[in-house]
Image (cartoon, rainbow, N blue to C red; front, top):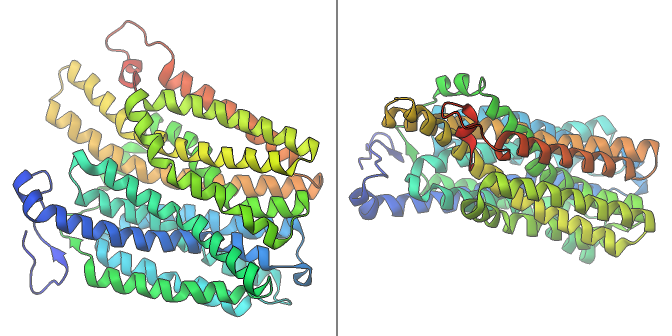
Length: 451
């Protein structure tokens, strides 16, 4: 490993697959970058979902109905999803350390603006604009995962990326828990305290990234892989399934507090007291989904997980009809847990799909090294696209809730549409990855057997 004195924090030689290099210096450097990447991504997730907490502070004096609030929490979801693709490319263009600093400091913009506008009398379009700017936090996941993926050897990528993703996702329940503590102690009229907590954290994350993280000179954008992977049917199948898992996780994270307030008349404190539980459990259990996929097969876990998500929606629909708050909350917590399992299993499926294609190509006479190198290139590119498209599920969920409460004054129409969607996801998973493959050894279906 060589670090040019003229290029501080740039590493010009990086060979993680070399066991001697890894034991001598690689592991220490990679793990250091991992932990500070997790911190920055964690804060990014918190700022991305900040408006799911701020709306709990917006009482009747703000003059916003349920439909307006659901629209307000939808726009950062949309912007965050769109930004995931350029953030993926930014790491290779500017360097992982450099972009982590920039992406962290960008979080100051929506946080400071929110501190200025969070008061009754602010026009709704101003709230929408500031919430949209908060979407920058959604891009941090893509750049962080791309960066950390380059630091670790193949045998440790699952562990490293699982920690990175889980640590970032936990930013959602953490900011909700902080919001609960503020509402419980200072009341629902003190939203600026929340921002006063996070603005220093953003600065700390940026300073620590600048001090302890590194750039890898060898990282280059592989635009050819992105061009190739967008032509792959499997990319879009997995993006569709990820809408059902991660899209559900982030969508419900934004919406659950508002649902409790509008459907069950919960106060901001009562809603905040349970809002964080589901995202917390969903974040913590994500690695379990990956581990189950390792043992049982990603497609099998994903199929049964979607079936279980449909059952959870059935429980929620029944609880809504019976006006049972306890059963309703339990159903949503279960749903959050299942989204976490599905996040882990679907992400495990992506590299398995492209490895399956490589094995089929080898069986037809292709060079093994070339085939598996292609699989690594395409799976990395596919992860970026799938992550971006999947995050749009959060937008669809909040728009569905908005329309349901606008027209029916209840979330029931949205619940039924979610249930139907999960059944479609289960059917798609079975059709592409679980139905028996034909006996023809050249059939593409064999590439996905056992995914």
